[in-house]
Image (cartoon, rainbow, N blue to C red; front, side):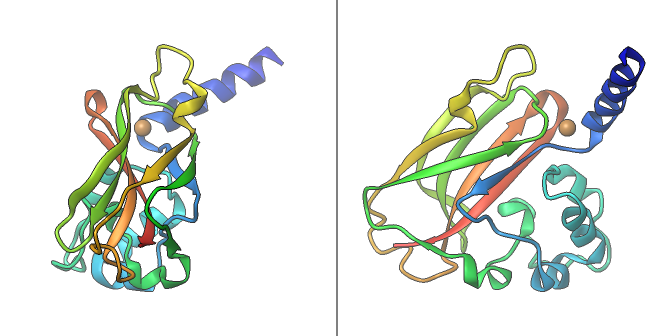
Length: 188
Ligand SMILES: [Cu+2]
């Protein structure tokens, strides 16, 4: 039994150095699809499709001649609205939105959730919540870092059109250069 457990721990430790580690599990997050593959290329698409929990740097390593200028790896890891028209969430001002993060492995860093305008990749509201340290490897992860709520403010019409805005969970572990993003398409 001990042998099996230590073997498993070794596998996890090795996987942890490259394979990773977190997504929004609720509300429904942007998923990889055919449009994402068309703009970012099959190699990046396959990387994400096989492991949505992975980091953005892993995608960058797979940039090639099939990656177009429309591929925005620094926004939602490149996942696109066009593949997610059925997943848009409508939130009136002051809606309290419960968010669940599925975390497969921690890396000490900072994290937050913001409303981001997709046309500019600029935060237009938030951070609505922040964690520092976030998802630490040196202490138990507080339950409220994987299950929490944010209040959506009045977005003043900036998010009236589907595809214009996302609620983005952003987690950056500088010490190991791994960045994670997971997005929910929202309108108001
Ligand atoms: Cu990692």
